[in-house]
Length: 206
Image 1 (cartoon, rainbow, N blue to C red):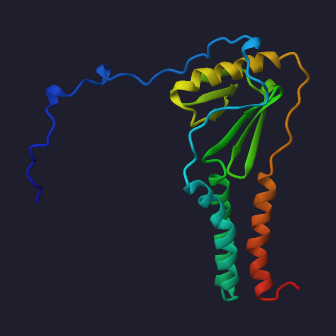
Image 2 (cartoon, rainbow, N blue to C red):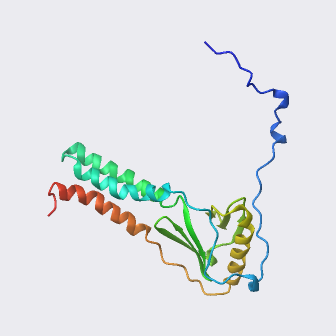
Image 3 (cartoon, rainbow, N blue to C red):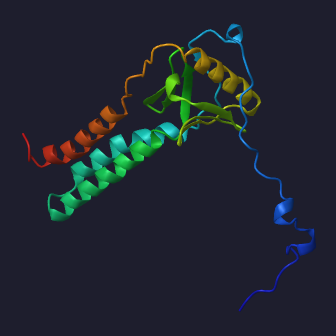
């Protein structure tokens, strides 16, 4: 039985047509800034405070999955469970490592963004254009985009202008691509802990 419609129904005449709805704001080019106006480099860009759960989401798999693997009884099902838990935990580590930005540092040669315990770097020569949104700045090269989120809305234009000025200044300098971050090592450490806990618990390896 369908319940009767209450008095919260919407009057179609009062509902705006799709073409009357305000469109989403288009990304804009950052304002120009001279080299003399640049802050001292390296410059740490402004970001909103990171939520408390971000670190917990990243660190929990390092503790929970090895502990669970060490408690499992050895058998065919348990071997499968170890593999599934390890894969799921690795996915959580990978995703959680890029969820929240903790620091964005601009240097003469690159942009460095810290996400949890990972540091991701991008050389200015690998950026073709910079666009500013409502609370983010997008650095693009072809179809590849790197989005810097969490910037206070009243400072996105300033951050975009600083990035654009540094990018133009670095155009004629030799390319110095940063070394890869420690993300690969952390995931490898997680795999060793997860599988190693099970192997040591049941004396499969000595």
